[in-house]
Length: 76
Image (cartoon, rainbow, N blue to C red; front, side, top):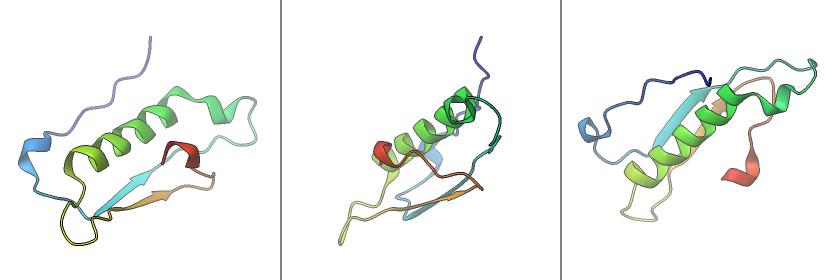
């Protein structure tokens, strides 16, 4: 069973130009980079960028991950 993350109500927000997320980092534990919760946080942030990311002007939305470990850069 996967841990559940509460999904925010996206209808409450207008366009977003900055998203900040805190990621767990269990390095140097074995298989730390394959933690399901980390993946879920990355996917939630990606969904926020697609659904509510800034779409006017140059259309860039900045994403900041607070963590000792690197984010999944290939996802973004």
